Amino acid sequence: MTEEFELICMQMITNSGSAKSSYIEAIQKAKEGAFDEAERLMEEGDQFFSEAHGVHGNLLAQEASGEKVEFALILMHAEDQMASTEMARVMAGEIIALYRAK
Image (cartoon, helix red, strand yellow):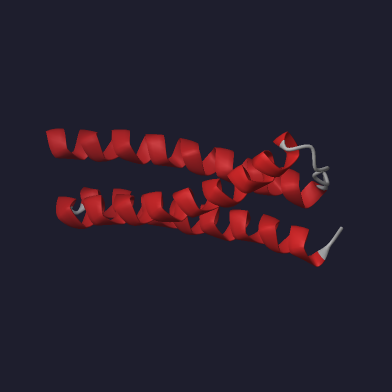
């Protein structure tokens, strides 16, 4: 495994983790009734998540162009973090909508 590959995976993991943290914090702000702040945090999370997707997309494009992309446990972990972050985003949006409806 190359250092560059590890860095790519870590970018996916850290950006996904930052996005997930923003989404969870957005729920907490909505619970307090601070919906503008919740919306800002959702947007912040989306920016982090977009960064993770961009890095992942580059790996997919690399493989689609015929270059071999290494598979390792760290890549599996990075993709798992991205999947759980996507679910956190969906759930945060739904929970915030419920708090708004109160």
